[in-house]
Image (cartoon, rainbow, N blue to C red; front, top):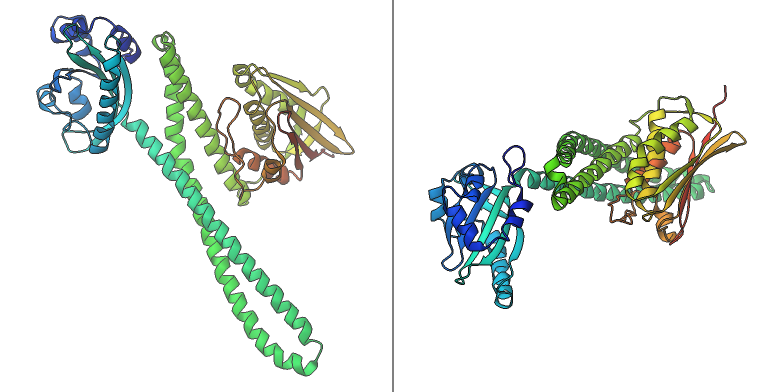
Length: 463
């Protein structure tokens, strides 16, 4: 019933709590009971609340590690004392729902999982996940049996990620405004040039007008210089922002993925389908966040000119085989067949790492937007000194409106995959930047319901 490290397996405990509630209560209150012995040695807090007078009949010693309170101090708390006001309001609504439900389902338990904020003895607030079961004893007494777990680290990581995303949106708005101001200046310059053309028709008018428009031009150039300074500052802020994101988020996300992989490999987790499924969700979310972070930082470096390719002779057939091998396990999870047609050696002058990222993003997108049991075909060819790679899927496809905006940073084209996989659209922007760094092009054809075809064309290597 307990996982390695002393953490209580919540799924097993709540399953065991289908035993008669008076038996569980007696076991918890009995110093020799099996549940009492178990809860005394777990890092999660187990508690029993009598709903007739809203008093705690049992709280496990782990409460001191969770909130700094002794068992006696916690037992003296009221429900109002034990959580923050907003959390209390939600819990009170949930209690009301449970009471209403149990009026018509007296012999059935009512299970709830909530995330609440609870005060610690030092005055701080922490986030806690509370798993509860509402149940009655034969004499009609209503009890809540609960397991509380500290999730403060997880909530802190979520808050940091949300703050970073909000900052990125604000930066995008500033860049858009700067571009609009630059367009205004360009229109002013066009108007000034037209005026000079008309002044040249008459020497006397030209001499008089030259002084006037020279002053206007000077003013305009000063405005343009000021705007250029602002643009340089905005660009520097953007680069610094992405650097902060890369530094502050990569490590905690990588740690989350590592712990999720470790947790998923534990025999005790594998034996609990619900816990194993939650672990897979955490792992997938972490990997998606890491992919988004890497694409975001890579795009920022490429678009700002700070990413320079290291060109060498690169065999596209070998590159594609490596990328397909890497993505085969991912495709297998959706029962998608990856088929590579690359029998001929085709060499280009390119950066192997960038090329793997380019084609890896295209294959990842094809898998993401393909239905379970679908197929993704990769074809390599060349003609007239140009190498081409085609990535085709038979998935959900795209309407023309999305296709036209795929490679524009000012348009939001990200959408969910066939299994609700998240997508930001940054991966395709990275593909476009990498193609251009290799003097190549990327094109797309798509139709809703019939799939998409992405074609990359790169100059072949010439000795």
